[in-house]
Amino acid sequence: MHRPIFEIAKDIQNEWGDKVNYAASPYLEAMRFLSLTTDKYGCDSGTEILAYFLSNASSFRGEKARQLKSEIRDLLENY
Image (cartoon, rainbow, N blue to C red):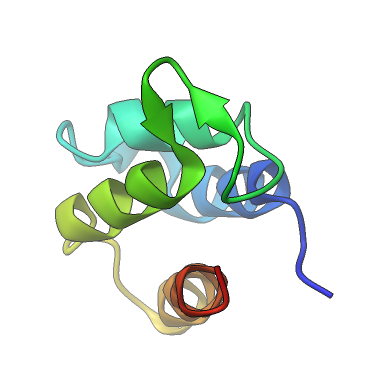
């Protein structure tokens, strides 16, 4: 069973802190309102938002960052 997306987003925000990349920030914000990859935020699906976040989160680094990104990839692979 996967955790809701909003929980992952909370962990990312806590880990990344105030230095969230400007390009990843809107997707991280949107993730706070999603539970599943099938949920929508505006016109985008959860799947799209997660993919856009990963594309813009290259500066999110470290062991915890790798774990959280892996969790997102797992959600995308099992969509």
